[in-house]
Length: 391
Figure 1 (cartoon, rainbow, N blue to C red):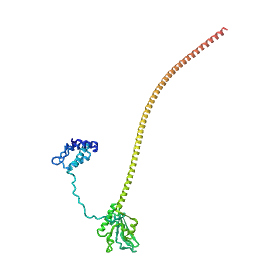
Figure 2: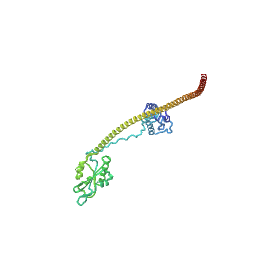
Figure 3: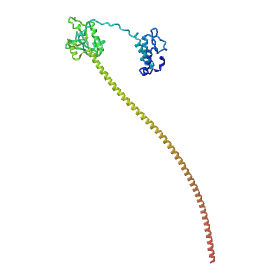
Figure 4: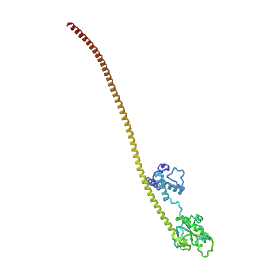
């Protein structure tokens, strides 16, 4: 059973250690064992049985093994990974006649005597220091006080060795002609201190040359890296200084101490990072909480605004309805008032007409009464006249 590499391009996201991978590996392995799947050509070259679509069908042993290993360990899906893993195992287990690494030659043993390690490790002064002697202090001031270059000048001259600090030493006569260069306390500082020492040793101006009794007087500088033996040397205030302020340690001690310090720094940094992560997590939690609160407040605000709009709309509708009712009521009232006013006007007119009639009637009655009265008075006059005549 063969698979073309192009048939499973969509499986790049699958895990090559999945059950499917193991299943395909077993299937291809069985095919290789029972010779139904063949990897070796007749001309002692090899081919990939799982890639029949590839133009190249003739590999060297190493090429095919590299190809199978690359696909087996990559992320090509269970079909490719499992099948090529089986090919890789088969090449290593069954076709080991052409291994990738040549067979080692017969071992030859070293029969010469190897010298034993003697003495203890060199104990240096920590922090790393360089001793500088024979500084020219021949000049004096008016009081006879010896003068020589100061720390800044010496540090500038030896800047290629990167000293962090330079100390010079004086006594009652003035400058003693000695200086102490302090280097960094790490491995780079050790390299600088050793380079300082080697530069003087290369010109025979190191510790050994300085303490030789047969050394002729000269004005050359001498220097070396400070070590345990310098604690008891005849270097005046410099020796006292290193006794008081320096520790005696081997390189191993310094490395272990630096490793311990680095480990402590890493642990402290891990704690700081953990603390920062906790703070970030707490801040994130607070942020999410605040975000949720803001979302809730925003939802309440939107709801309140919606209710406000609804209330305003309802109030507007109610007000319009009230105004409409008031207008209708006012119109009805005005109509009633108008009708009553018309009725009253009509009644008033009727009353006025009746009053006018009554006034006319009264006038007529008065005139009639006056006429009757005049008539009566005339008749009475006539009666009186008649009576008087009669008498």
